[in-house]
Image (cartoon, rainbow, N blue to C red):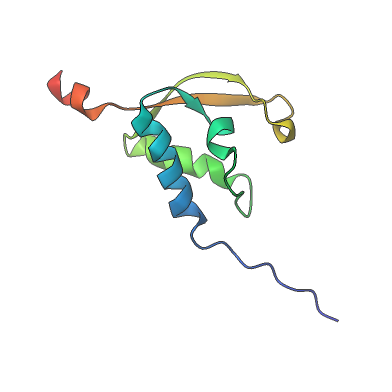
Length: 93
């Protein structure tokens, strides 16, 4: 008997980008722990890194520090602290 194939979540990437952008618009520092809380997980956990890289390269967020993760699955590893870039302030400068 064959094994069922898990369906790939085709909207995960766009939904994750939207979620991180929403945290960025709030203007407060945030971590991946906060973003992931209550959000569905990707097919592979490494996909989260690409979300932050994409938004940092677009100038939407920047990393302001590090701290230990509070997620049990991360086993106390380091996670970045991010903040949205305030484009209005940058244009005025």
